[in-house]
Amino acid sequence: MSGWSRKVGADSWAWGRVCRDVGATAAATAAGASAGWAVWNYLNGQAATARTVIPHRTDNAPDGDGVYHPDGRVTRYTRDTEVDLFLTVFGDSTAAGLGVDTADETPGVQVARRVAAETGKTVRYANKAIVGATSKGLAAQIDAMFIAHERPDVAIILIGANDVTSRNGIRASARRLGDAVRLLVGGGAKVVVGTCPDFGVITAIPQPLRTVLRQWGLRLAAAQRAAVRAAGGRSVPLADLMAKEFRAQLDFMLSPDQYHPSAAGYALAADILMPPVLDAIGEWGSAPLPEPPEESPAVEESRVATGLRRLLKQV
Image (cartoon, rainbow, N blue to C red; front, side, top):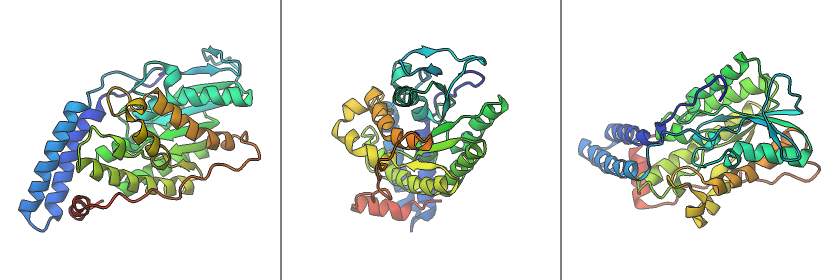
């Protein structure tokens, strides 16, 4: 990526941080110290299992930056290139498209190609996402672009999974996302945000750790939705709109690392992001937009989940 390097490797070691922070919270909130450390030890063992299944990624996502033409051509962008629309993507490894082999399979390129084909516009695409990023890094991604004197017409943000695995506070993470949206809107961009995905589809994470992470993710997605709307952006509840198809075709929808989406998973994300993107740029037409669910469904009730909720107090 021009002018900005992508950080690699946070996804796998984050499990160690998850179990450490979960254990500390459990120990602090349990009725007795022995109960807290029992939970810590159990989740610590599960996090260790997850680390053996989910590989440590040292690669970058394919670079799809360029100019996408309505006839399908892709050309290199230069300062002299005339374009109709500047589309950028910010966020984490999912935004970058980690897990696929070619740039055409990444979500941002899939959206850029479709926008060009459906609108007849020439679209410049730039991916500013950084592998391993959390909401704490969004402002830096945007500032780097502004320092280069670039202003996108439309921006897509995909963020949240690493805030969960790093156990960043829900309110703080959502606030930082809202601030990032506000920065982009202030710079003249239309902003579409895909909120935190559903950890419940990642079967490589054992139970009950998977349920704990899923609940944190759903709560974060709800907070993100409110923050994005307040900042003038459009939110898309990816957990609600993607989880059913992921569960039905898990091997098809996940990449070989069993954590990041495959090309098919990213294509589904692009399908879901296209209507709000087209609407944001005034190209959706007169048909009503699809109506996503108002809020994420509650995590399935079980004795284990209920007990963990009592022990794990969210910041």
